[in-house]
Image (cartoon, rainbow, N blue to C red):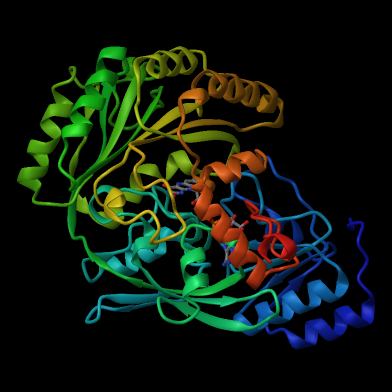
Length: 466
Ligand SMILES: Cc1cc2nc3c(=O)[nH]c(=O)nc-3n(C[C@H](O)[C@H](O)[C@H](O)COP(=O)(O)OP(=O)(O)OC[C@H]3O[C@@H](n4cnc5c(N)ncnc54)[C@H](O)[C@@H]3O)c2cc1C
């Protein structure tokens, strides 16, 4: 199988000699494996995939793609919902082999390459009782999650992943390798924290680390009723900042701890992460337990990194459609629609995900980074997934009809949870002035929009800027 693009043989040969990493072509035996993304809905066929080994490989790949007129996609962990980290007939800069993680426990900092996965980072940092707040799945790459913001199990106590970024090594559109910090290229540093993959290819992040040892984690399953959801809102709003919960309304899948008669029942599955003392954590969870007789309560002390054991099964690759928004309120109308749609879900992998926010995320100044929605109280996401192509139609139809009924009450979007939903939705991820500032920085660092295969922010037109 080939793609539509043909790269001159000589140019390709020279390029292969100039890069240290492997070059994967449509005829390579590992082509299919290398182009497969986490969201199996996407079946894209790039002309060439460069498995970069360092920043100079990245710089050479950008130069080669531009010389050959090839569109560029950038892949770290490959978890882009809309499949932006692959393209058709273009060049993919694949960072997934750049996985080095160096922890400095004395300084409480770490350098990590963006191909490293959240779970690998959590395990490496856990050895010292340290962490960076990434998301809820171990298989997500540091590249994508960090550049979009990073909302996870520590968001209420420690904020977003970007709130812990101290420096970023990035290869810009002209092939320059620069380090952006609060004092060097501060505009770029600001834009990279929330502005996504628009400004260059990141080859290293320096993070500061937070102390997280044993947490109170696990799962608490309650019957999903409107009263329980109302109670969940009430007790979440009163919860201490040490407690973050990520919850799902879904039909209970078979789980080792679940009584057989409860499999398939509508539940609110609450995954807590309490970072203070276990005793205080139990007290913080009691109001949640009191909302109804639990279907199951398997909350328990665990090392922070073990929180990923709980989400591993549910986050295996599938054919997935998501729709998501920030909300100021999780109101009764939205609850009713969630209960109605989940009850009629077409596959067992369809759910509504609820993330009460606030705490430290809201305490950082809105203009400090390019992530605008600091004041959002909830992130609500429709997750629809199937295992076979035959299910695609019903899965997508369910997700879009469901979203239609709750979308009007939203107040912003999270760029990492967007699909290909158009420019208006990308703009929704940012305050108007943040978007303008990003477009101006894009003009300076990538005036030709070389990095367009993403939630794209077009460079501010030269004339408009003048
Ligand atoms: C199962 C699952 C669970 C998730 N859970 C969470 C969560 O709890 N919290 C959360 O905040 N998000 C979560 N996400 C969303 C996730 O943050 C985004 O999908 C993110 O983009 C994935 O990063 P990646 O590196 O794995 O993806 P990729 O597909 O490799 O990259 C996605 C995009 O990011 C950009 N990018 C990636 N690497 C680089 C780089 N090195 N340089 C420049 N640009 C780059 C590119 O534009 C690329 O198209 C989840 C996604 C999935 C599929």
